[in-house]
Length: 410
Ligand code: LLP
Figure 1: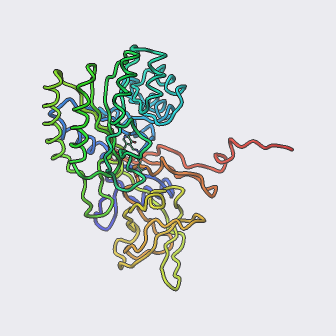
Figure 2: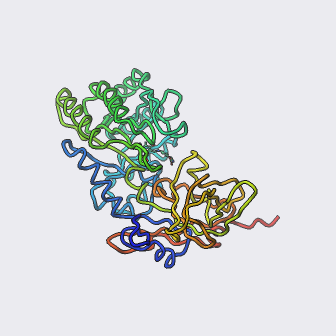
């Protein structure tokens, strides 16, 4: 978002015009930022055959998927539905890596039938795959490296007590199953968590993967996961992509020499590609002074953006309507019947009833984690690209809440 002559813009379109045209609350994504981020990654790893598999769970709108596809990304999916949406967006099945957790074998069979890449994270499903398909269906293995990394405990998934991945301690059992069914293991994968700023975590992961990889002669790729840190707070440290690109590419090329062939290097970022591109634009319903606090109550809440409630996440907030206003301290809260604080003790340009606030970093895990709690409707989504703002999802209406309800007459 840029401030030019007292007006805020997203991708050269005035923010207040977007609100007038599409109403609020509305999620707005800046397509140029998404493309720029993808290019940063592609360039940082340009010394190796790199593939970026966008983690679709972060933001699954088909128009965003199409944009990423056009720019050369593949897809990382976690459910059959997400995979089917990816196919509808035009991704080839082999460009979609299906990495489920705790799904039934039925769903894995469906993924095989669709022709998706398969990445398994438990030994029982490897057994099922072997029994049914033997060596004919290649699959990758998601490993758990026992590394504690990530912004908070809920998004740390590579530690010993996590439900994700096959523990590196269980390699003997993995190898038993691989040999028993002559499984074709085409990739190894580790994702340790989200909000990882230290390049070292990826290097540590890499050395674990490189050691284990020597046991698998049919590898085509090594997948280093996602989780790059994005700046939520002004001044936040983030993953240094250039440094990571240089160090990891060097290590990777060294490994490929030892392995005897050049493999592909994969990443599956969600936040890095779409977080900063997204804004949740909301309108101020009320400015409420209590004996202790000034609350700004907006026409949105934890139903649209659950990250502050779920992870104590910080999202920067800007009063788009009053760039000249005198700075004051507020608690920005939602309209849900819960203490859904979006931002506590925030200094904003003076907020008046009707003012539009932009909640930043709302591109990743914003809309995709939204709900209908309190029977509230989900917002519209708008994509701004090449100087134009276009609707990419209609705002819900009451009928959407009712359409699957069936009245039982007892
Ligand atoms: N790969 C795997 C296997 C994952 O589980 C995830 C995220 C990603 C890649 C993408 O991670 P990212 O680059 O977006 O950090 N809802 C939480 C984040 C949970 C992420 C779940 N898995 C949040 O809003 O912070």
